[in-house]
Image 1 (cartoon, rainbow, N blue to C red):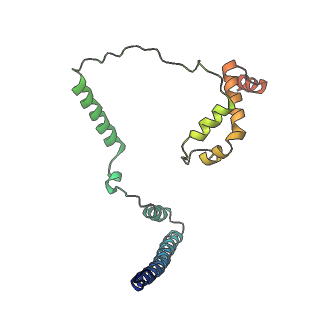
Image 2 (image 1 turned 90 degrees about the horizontal axis):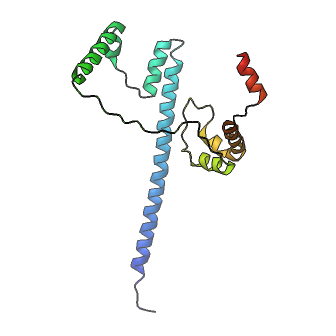
Image 3 (image 1 turned 90 degrees about the vertical axis):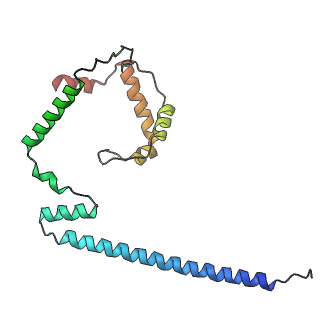
Length: 181
């Protein structure tokens, strides 16, 4: 109708479709290969751990290898006395090198103490919990994500604890335990 040659365009579309299908096939095979490598690695380390058969030294060495933990072989060659002497010498050398230095003038300044409490609302507590980073340590008794999920349930209790701290009020059972303990 307009005199356009569409055969070139259709061949490009077809070749693009073929390239896309080849890429999808390659991507699927790559995923299978990664899964196979992960399974083989996992199987290898499981076998290494199970083959330690109660040998705790071998088990710890295997776990260090699993965690890619670089060990320092010369760490076990020193005694406590050598460490104490090294530490003492280091402190003495720092002390000797700073002995002629004039003391730093530290000006006294007013710092806030924990005696200055202000009331807090449940909304403020929820906002504070929500703004906390989602980081968790193995020492944390509760994961951060769980506290964030339960912030609407926890915030009234946290606000109540703050009010108790401000007013100095403590339940009778707490005071009773403090006297006995």
